[in-house]
Length: 263
Image 1 (cartoon, rainbow, N blue to C red):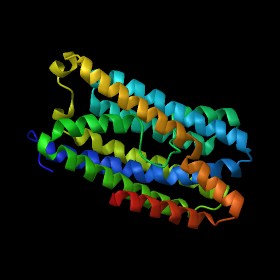
Image 2 (cartoon, rainbow, N blue to C red):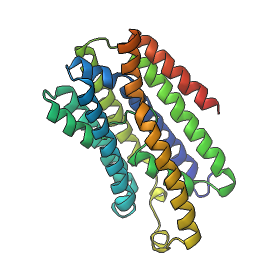
Image 3 (tube, rainbow, N blue to C red):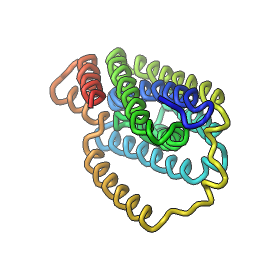
Image 4 (cartoon, rainbow, N blue to C red):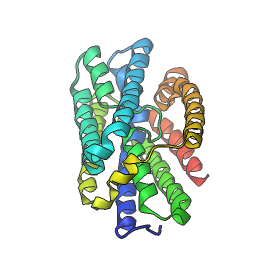
């Protein structure tokens, strides 16, 4: 990864490391979250609402990050996002009612999709694009995505370890600990990851707006279909329908992530 400015290479490594840690946590949560909710006695309808709440929180958080990260400071926003998700993970482990879990899922931006998405990744992409030269940008994004898929695979494997309510609560605490660990990485990044004031003042051209609008529409349609088969729902369905051991469900999704990483 060649850098476009001094410190760019180091920032790319730090961003990628934090993102991989985050993807391990999210990959694990996406597999066992539905099982945790079922062990709490929630039925399928309530589980669906809780998953939707987490995804809605993730969408809202991404909107806020996109609107305020450059003015607030990208490094500060990284830390804030990870800290909020970490605290919410602890709250989910301790929550004792449906309403508190619903609120915790929204505030914690619980990602049940199985792949890293959300406010932190949106800022990641801006930083990566700014930190490397145009010639190496595609290769940098490929390596970054590869690391995310590997992290998701590792997290999926680990998700098969807990088999009880106590185990799932402990897994949520580990999830929170990993997000807290990523918090410690972001302050190490250089000031060059921050947005330049001149960049914020440049408006998008009509052609760029059209391209972004078309891409956004395709993403919406893709996410609409993907929302019916989140990894959390699939893992829950495999176990409830076929009685598959949670450990094998983790192996299944880990294999899928590794195959995807090859692409």
